[in-house]
Structure formats: structure tokens, C-alpha cells
Image (tube, rainbow, N blue to C red):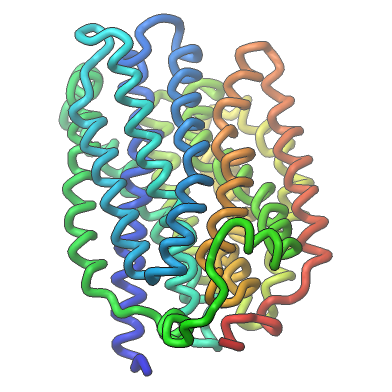
Length: 426
């Protein structure tokens, strides 16, 4: 039995590792404005960003593979083993980008190294989501499971926030020319070093009781993709439906928003970074609030709030931003969008974990999520930039609204997992 102090230590340790994983992942997006010309020197700013967004999407294509392989690994070898392997791969990917040659010195080899590195990071993150969501949900106590599991997105957002904060520091110290020459390499190098620290932390985590019980049973069904979709098809499809609108909204309102503020609204790149840093900090603080609320009123009402608000207000929010000249007004509009998406981000991990039995939980959380995340989250920037390039940028606003509406239908029809959680039955 894990005592309260040890439980808290494990949750903090697991969350810290998740923070570094997502920091490494988001450094790519935060610094894309500076390294895009290094790897893709031809074309205007939108064309260069379109190429980097395509590589960003390639990383997402690898996430279902990582979710499948590493989800099975975490179900068969333990949550702790899955978390340790994922951070090792993330370290390798960051180190490769930090040391990658430029297009000017190596030609096509430069973007090839970038693509391979992002593929490795995609494998890592595909396994990280399922392992960390499962670990935090199983380690948390029943009464505060929504609250504690929300720290997956606290640390996810903190990783993005840390990447932006590092961007601001390096911008102030190195200037534009220094950022394009070496600043982005420093950022990826820091990510690789932090991943080594996290590897040590994760080696000392306690394995969850849920996994220990399943492992001790010995005759459990094996975790596999075939068994997942054969034995739990409804739950797997539900995870995909729950994820589609939420992940598209999250990437539209966060990673793409920084570029949108600079490339469409017209803010200076440093101003756009400061707006997003402030907004993401408040967004991070909202996650435990959403998680705690779900412990009191249930998971469904919180997700339904996001579905309704997102479907109705995404289009007018983006349109309002188009003509905004005040950084404070832009912050307010971005913040309104992030308050809405908190209804998804704060509890999506625990909702998915509560749908599956322990022997297949990591895979059940990771694989359907990764598929939907690749289709909708990973392509968000590319779709937005492509529609802008062909002169129909507002079609993206409509696209986001429609996908959120589709997820809203799933939120309304799903059962209340707070009362039917399979974590409680293990």
C-alpha cells in the first residue's frame, strides 16, 4: 500500500518527467520561426513555416506507432519502465536536432536529420502520453483522481511555457541574428540535458499497485492492438471521438496561435511570444481547477462545457483577433479560448484511463488517442497555414468549430466515468 507522502512524491516525480518530455517536444514549435530558414531556406516566411509544420506533422505520424509499441510495453513491463524508455528516446531526438547540420553545409541531409529526429521524438511522445496518464491516474486516490491526473496537462503546458520562457530569455540575450545562428541549438541542447536528469528521476519511481496486481495474477490477457479493438472497441472509438475536437482546439489555441499572432495578426515575433507566455501561464493554473471540479460534479459536464463553448465561439474569436492591434486585447481573446479548452485538457487523461482495465490500460489510453491526435492535432498547423496560403484562412476557423461539435456529440452520449471507473474495480 502506498502511503500519502510516497503517493505525492511519485505524482510529483512523474509530473516532472512529463514536463521535460513536453518541453523537448514544444521547443520545436517555439523556435520554428528561427530555424525554419536554416533547414528550408527557399520561399517566403509562410512557405518556410509550412515546411516546418509538415515535419511537425511527421512527428505526429509516428505517435500512433509509439503509442502501440510502448503502450504494450508499459502494460507488460510496467508503467515505470514505459516512462523511462520514452524519456530516453526524447533525449536522443533533441540531441540530434541540436547537432544537426544546416542546409547551406549539408544540403538535403539537413532536413533529413530533422525529420528522423522528430520521428524518434514522435515515438517517445506516443508512449509518454499513455504511460504518464495511466501512471498518474492509478497513483492518485479515488476521491481526488481528477485533480491529480490534471497535472499531466499542468506539466504538458508547463513544458510549452518553459519552451516559450527560454525563447524570451534567448531573444533578449542573443538578438534576432544570434537566435537564427545558435539560439535554437542551445534550446534543443538544454532539452537533451534535462531528459538525462528525468531518466534518473524515473528510475526511482514506485510502480503502481494496479500494475503490480495484474502482473502478480500471471494469467492476464496480453496487451495488444488486436486485443484492444476486439475486446474494447466501443471504448477505443470513444477515446478517438473524445480526442478529436479537444486536441485540434488545443493545438489551434496554443502552438499555432503564436505563429498566428505574428504571421496573420501582425505582432512582432517577440510580442507574440510574450502574449502566449502569459496566456499559457494562466492556462496552466486552470488545469487543477477543472480536475477538482470534475471530482465534484463529474467528468461529462466539464467536457460538455468545452464542446458547446468551443463550437460556438471559435470562429468569432479568431475573426476578432484578425483586427486586434492591442497586445492586451489579444491576450484577452486568447485567454477566452484557453478557458474553454480547459474543459477538455484538465480531465481527458483520467476519463480515458477510467474506461479500460489495468492489463490493457496504457495501450487503451495511448493508441486511440495518438491516432486522433495525429489526424487532428498534428495537422492543425499545416491545415491552418495551407488555407492561409491559398487565401481561405477563415476556413480553418470553421474546420475547428465543426470538429469540436463532433466531439461534443460524444461527450453528451458517453457514460459518466467518475462513477463507472474501471480503476476502482482493479
